[in-house]
Image (cartoon, rainbow, N blue to C red):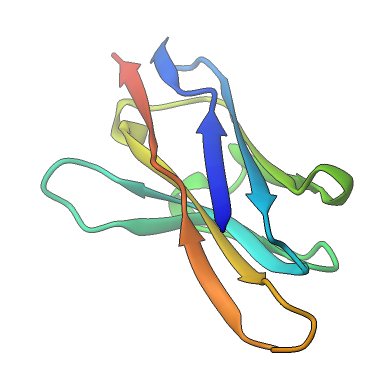
Length: 122
């Protein structure tokens, strides 16, 4: 009953910028955290950036200083601003949400979006 829908991927030249968006909808009581992961061909999925309720965030070392994660609580949406993109940033980017769906049952479920392709050409 919860959907995460990503948008904003595409093809960009090295040094360029992209902004990813992920909107959560459905039966949501509280969002504890949202984040972005990526998976390049032949590699494991890795955390790119995450933001928790309250606003603190963390980043993979490889994107620090280039990527910025932010959230809009009113819209249940998280953004990833990606600047100074490099060919090694090429991957499918997945949105992740740690979400409580019921006030009566305090269980956090993990949800994933369908992924959006980011391709950085050299």
